Image (cartoon, rainbow, N blue to C red):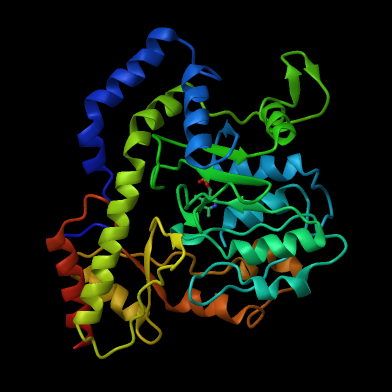
Length: 366
Ligand SMILES: *Cc1c(COP(=O)(O)O)cnc(C)c1O
């Protein structure tokens, strides 16, 4: 049996005709940038994410960049995933990293207080693997210090914290439609969500060269738009998103049950499921303290795809060496980089495949 890490073919096969019609309509219109498809997707995502506004752009990375530009974050302003740190550094601002909560792999709110200075411009939690960061605590820190939150919800569209959707809790939230995300396009795409009308308007200007109209520019922006072909593809997929994310969560629960029943005899910790939230399981990531790399090799040899997401923490990347962090700066982050492994998880994954994955882990353990 083969269990690939990803399987985008199955989803495409189920939507192929609808997708082709939708794309053909865009070709027939010959309207490719900033049109009806993009506006329809913006409305759909805003409603889905419980925000008043959503603004499409060219990628999840650009969504982060635009959010920071809208906050006037610029050169030398201090302030997971590479895109998050890179968006900050791209503007010449200084990213300040903090350690993670070892159970959720999300930002640890307890570590933020000591990292905040009078020059901190934003707090940027990443809702990693499809689970919201601890937003109550983050919102409290945000309001106490009057520092806005930009949520990186690239992996968490539809995830909830106490009924509140990812992207709706901070001043702005960002999404990615990269093909492998829970809602993935046929290329790059991204979106920002906000409840603030002025920020929404500014984001619309910033993504179109900063122009209020085609030839009136109050500031310099970028060219970062979600094109109509991507929006058309995403609109076909969008009605299925909840079902897909629920299937992911069900299959995650099955992995966790199977792993517990397998009585492995080695330490394999399944992901934590929040009691007061909705985890959309963009990834199913286990922690294997002792044998991670050998398990990864064993699974690969048995045809089970797997991947170490983020083997090198941001603070240990060469491009951020100037920040002065080093080994030991963030022990939990470094431990997660050494110990975690993602297993195959997608709506089309079968019970047989899941049983085979866990059987393969069991055969390694014994
Ligand atoms: C995918 C991702 C991004 C970047 O999105 P792109 O659309 O690939 O630019 C940013 N942050 C997180 C957490 C992501 O998973």
